[in-house]
Image (cartoon, helix red, strand yellow):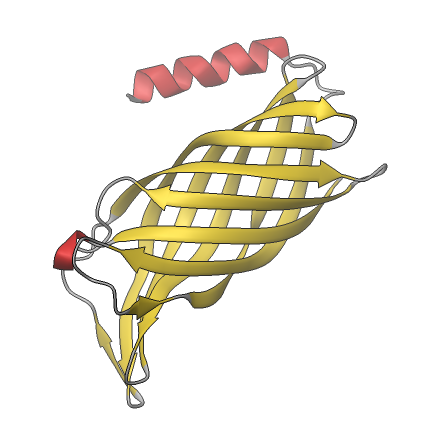
Length: 181
């Protein structure tokens, strides 16, 4: 898997010139929950995302956009209980520009769990049985204004259980804004 990823990066790097490479930052809101068979009592948790983004044009209408994000996820439950699952996420989005400035995005994402806490009644404790690695798919759209400001909306669905309890998987809707330098 590492060899394939490295080969793809080399292929992309070989098709991009230094003038076309763009780098930026983005931040936004997450509306996240955990979903699993037979477990319907969880509500969304509003969190944040912040990170770095690069865009590597491959052609006039297609770009590859790797990102490095800190993403606050999890869920809430009745009785004032919050499950905090935060990740360092590495999405690799393919961007197809439909018209000037507007793009559809699709790609895989790997997340590394860095926080797994449960808060209830003012007490905090570690959540057990959280998977360290999360594999997810992402689908979204974005708009870049003339200049360097952009907005994105994205839906992320976990492919493997984030928490072995009821095989709960992450589901996240993201709204973000960013600036490319």
